[in-house]
Length: 453
Image 1 (cartoon, rainbow, N blue to C red):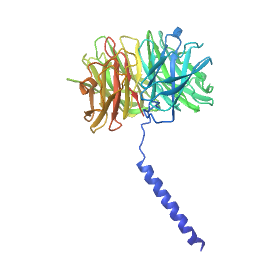
Image 2: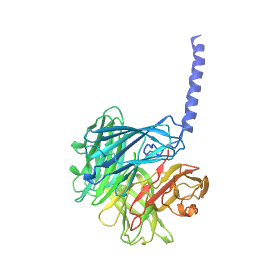
Image 3: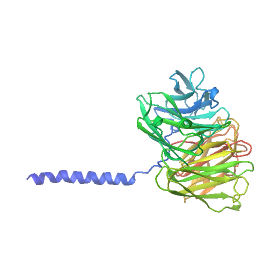
Image 4: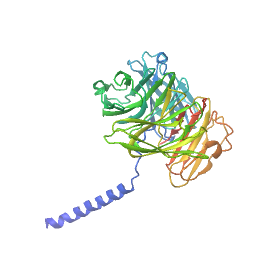
């Protein structure tokens, strides 16, 4: 009798397991290298958060401004909290009108060296980005902290400095460890282990105090408690750049705008976070030339550099598209400059939606759409009312498989790329939008459009 009573329960459990299995099989995987974004353009959200870090005081020369943009036709109340590494704080409220852009220097009126910003937005559709005062780099604000963070390409040689700017966006203390990978191998300085950051506080880690006189340094920040917003701040001589990093190494990456101009330097910098060598292949597309495959090996817990410009195998022309593949996950960054001083930018994983914004006001030298998949996609483009370029409303663009196309070519109505603010939506999450700010020679400052996941 008891066995008969168990039959319905067993049937229910079996059905439950089947349902769980079906749901699991239909779940979509997420690229593990993506940083959490605050750029969701859903204007119907009840509230959203923006966290920004990476700016210093003017005295240190790595200063700049944070810019918020309302992408909706509704006003939003924003509460802004600024904090310094010395614990100084300010708080204020403001209303962002429809399509309004608001920029500010978080160091204004605060004592300290490095600064973080936390913003609470009533509603959705507000995006954030920070821009250096020299307009040499940009970094997105994100929606929540991370528990792992990787970046490569840092330089602590004489005349350069590398700093990890760290913001704890939560109401509880955070604790983390920092380890590095370079020509010296794996290093985990005792000073960088068990590092604590108080709730809603800012901290800075000067890599050069422990990793002395080293070039091409990779970093892993492992958060033991809580979550953190992290941005790498590289000062290479007079050049200042942000390295936004990723939350996991990857076996593939694409850099659609790599300069090959005369008098320019362009490198892909790698760091190996593992105990075995990693073989890397670089496919360089530079029409109408045929460029042979470039390859290298990254030593265990080491670093390596692939030079794209100057390179006798790669003609000096315009922009090249560089696709990276490896037999094991590796950390990747692009370094560009005109000599020994370079600016860093991290790789951008493909996404379904982007906001392209001319936040410096100086326009773009180049902009590209890249379809990273083996299937064609359609792209929908709409400019916001604040855009000073052409007025586009739901313009459709077709992009073939494994193709990079100039935005000016895809959208001939765009007579120029200055003052451009537009939303780009792809039919599949395989789109990369890359932007190059106006520099001489071209390609010295490469930034990513703001992804809108």
